[in-house]
Image (cartoon, rainbow, N blue to C red; front, side, top):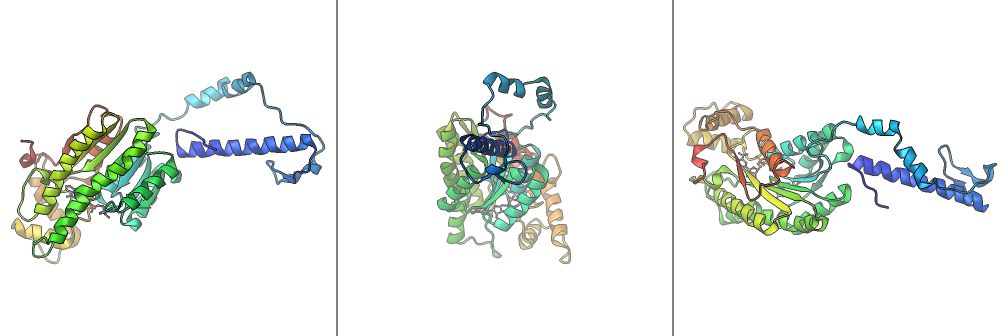
Length: 361
Ligand SMILES: NC(=O)c1ccc[n+]([C@@H]2O[C@H](COP(=O)([O-])OP(=O)(O)OC[C@H]3O[C@@H](n4cnc5c(N)ncnc54)[C@H](O)[C@@H]3O)[C@@H](O)[C@H]2O)c1
């Protein structure tokens, strides 16, 4: 049995109505035929056929009468009084990297906007925690979570299959997962270099490549949003592997936009430093950055105090002058992912506070 509805709960309820109707038909049919079919399902406890006094067969209403029941004034008034649908109602979204930072904010904001969400992350505990938070907003049937490692096609396929199984399809794919390679002496080994390109570039290709057949089979509009970085255009000493990986990712966005047009749009955001909520800023990286920029700090300060200090420094370098919040990035991602940008594809949208070094040239 396949049932449809504007959301998962409505689809389930429709299925339950059918299941009950089938029970009624079976029961009535069994009574009419006079055969002992065991217990008859009914609203109260099940009862044996022999307990019924009246024998009758199941007879369906004529279509005109069924129509009258569905479309009488009170029923129509009920439909009109339903709350308006939200921006992402009827959309199914997978947020890869949803266990932390920007991905977490995307999942929570999408929950407010009515989407069905599959939170996917290599860190399954983190994905579960975000799933629980998003369920508080959107209800428990609207959000699921799954483990994924985007370096491995098998887990990508399994995670996508799980989204389709739980929600019936996929409309939006978002990836925020990436790594920022760091080492205490600032030297990036060949292994780290390879892994950075593998996760930040190739894995993005594999992820979209596995999602494409689902989008194409559905035959309806879909969209992909990936996450680049201001570092894709601003060259820096000591972050070569990361910067090169993000430059390649930005170009991958343009390549995919061409390959998947016209039905699947592919865009990205390009944030500058987002310290809040990110696992990319462990204490030693924050201290290394404070030292690099000759900023005074107290060794005894907490992790958060040091991170705030660094965030304020980065903010001073931007035109808008305030730290970039992961929620600002989530807003931009959902703008590109949703119904308000049907004519935007192959685009990289900056969320960098107006970092003039990253102005396009
Ligand atoms: N935070 C920043 O300053 C900043 C700046 C510019 C761009 N970005 C980009 O934004 C994105 C998100 O950054 P964030 O700060 O939210 O990072 P984060 O580290 O807080 O979150 C990334 C998530 O991706 C997951 N992940 C990592 N590798 C994975 C893999 N192979 N498979 C599945 N999941 C994996 C991690 O478990 C984590 O939950 C990244 O692409 C990053 O490069 C971040």
